[in-house]
Image (cartoon, rainbow, N blue to C red):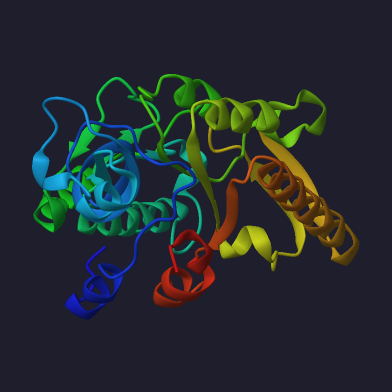
Amino acid sequence: MVLDASFYDTLSRLKLAMRYRSTMALSGNRKSTQKGSSTEFSDFREYMPGDDIRRIDWNAYGRLDRLYVKEYMEEKEIVVSILLDTSASMDYGAPKKSELACRLAAAMAYLSLSGMDRVRVYDMQHMQAPLVLSGGKKALPKLTDWLGQRTFDGRVDVAEAVRKLDLKGPGVTILLTDFLQEDFLDAGTGSIDKLLRYLDYARQKTILLHILAKEELHVEYTGTRNLIDMEDGESLRLTLDDTSIRVYEKALQAFIVRLQKACARVDAVHAVCSTGQEFRKLIFEDLRMLYDS
C-alpha cells in the first residue's frame, strides 16, 4: 500500500465533490449554510443590536438610510464515511480485491484529510468501532496501520452496515465492496434502490466503488472446474466454455448497468474498480468524476 510522495502531492490538490452544504459546527474547507466570518460574501440583512459594526455596509446606508450588515459563508468541515467490505469474497484475485479496496480507502481518506474534512473509516463487520481521523495529512500513518490490521473473512451485510452509520448532517459516504450479496444480485428485491434512497434521505453524497478482480471481469479459465463459495464453502461443478463465459459476462454487465441506473436516480456515483487497472490511472483519470473541478 506504499505510494510515493508525488502521488500524494497530486492527490492533495483534489477535493471530493459535495451535493449539500455542510451544517456542521466544525472548522474546515467546506461552505456551510451557517453564516460566519470567512471572506466569501453571502447576503445582506438588516442591522440588529449586537451585530459587529465592522460589517455594516455604509454604501447601502447612504442610499437607503437604513443599516445593513454583510453576511459571509463560514468554512465548515464535513464527515466523509468510508465503509470497507471485509467479507471473504474480497480476498479473491491476483492481486486481491482486498488490497485494491485498502489502497482506495487510503486514497479517499487522504484527499479528504487534505481538505481538512473529518474522516471515519469503518470495517463493515465492526461498525461499532470506526477509525476517526482528523487533523489533515498527518493522520495517514494511523490509517495505514489500521488498514493493515484488517482481516477478510466471513460475511457482510452491506445494507445493515450502512444503517449503523452515525449520520448527522450532509456528508459523503463511500462504499468499497464487490456487491456479491444475494439480495443485491437479485433485481427483484430492490435492495440497491432502498440503500441508495436511505443515504439520499440522510443527505449523503454516495459513492459506490465497485471492487472487482480482473478474473471476474474477464474469465480466462476453461474446462470443468469446481467453484467454491469463499464465504460458506459450498461448491459447484461447472464446465466453462465460450458460451457459458458469455452468459456470465452478459449477466455481470447487466448487474453493473442496474447499479449505475440506481445511482443515477439519486445523483450517486458508481464506478467499477478492477484489480487489473493501473492505480494512478484509476485515481486520477477513471475516478475524476468524484472530484470538484
